[in-house]
Image 1: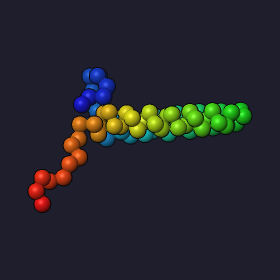
Image 2: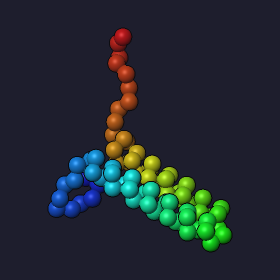
Image 3: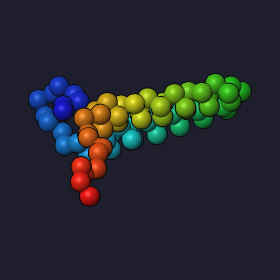
Image 4: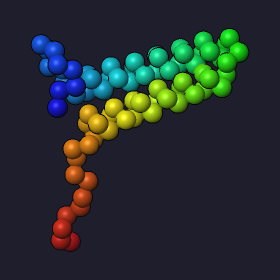
Length: 74
């Protein structure tokens, strides 16, 4: 499944690394900036929403189509 419709078809691991780097930098910097200005609770909420969004993206893009069943006999 292609995540981004571009002329270059990136391997899945490259998209995963970009997602991880983007999530860590966005969540971390936003949490730091909000906490340092006195909005610690809001910073924590933004951090949690960023990571939940990344997990939802991983589920939709890579894991949703996997069949997680064992063998029928055995």
